[in-house]
Amino acid sequence: MENQTSESVTTIKDNTGNPAPLGLMGFGMTTVLLNLHNAGFYELGSMILAMGICYGGFAQIFAGIMEWKKNNTFGTVAFCSYGLFWWSLVALLILPKMGLASKVESSAMGAYLFMWGLFTFVMFFATLKSTKALQFVFITLAILFFLLAAADWSGIAIIKTIAGYEGIICGLSAIYTALAEVLNEHHGRTVWPIGQVSK
Image (tube, rainbow, N blue to C red; front, side, top):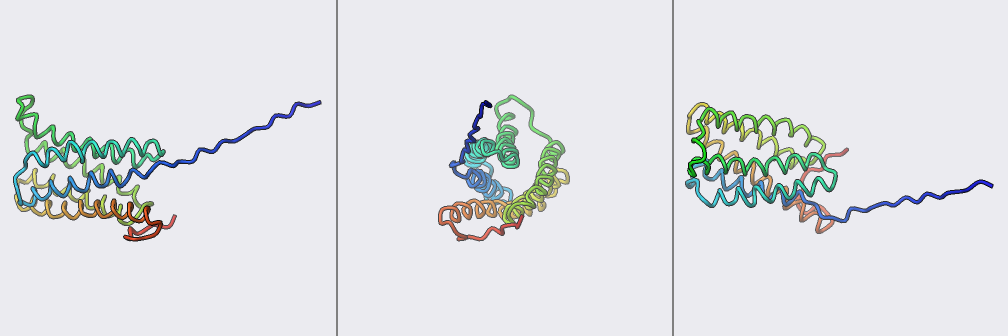
């Protein structure tokens, strides 16, 4: 007489919320505010630094950790990286004022921004399987980093001003994408279109 064993399969349903809108809002709002400065509307002050630490930094890192829980490598890498970008940018600005480091040279700042542009440009190709809205966010962000790098390397002020306006567009597109995801998910239909890509 053979022993029969039955195997039971347990399926765990993910009922957690979508963390992407939080990360996109943290990125988008902080990017708009910083680039209003780059466009020449006001000086760089504590408002931008606080946003960089809290919403641009903490919120995106939280979103990245939540994306990791959802097994989303792209979301984890993107949100954690850009959250830590904001922290590193704030550190570059405040460490010299605290006497803990020398002020970064323009050539070095250009290299810093260029590397972030390169990272973003490669990440853009991962968005080709995502929405058109997210593709726009990433390609405009890559352009923003490259423009800011060119401004630091060349010392031409108008390039930074142009980068500021381009960055405002980039940040607003991230805000739009975040709010569209919230509204569409909440209502169960397309309220704001984000250009779904067929898979």
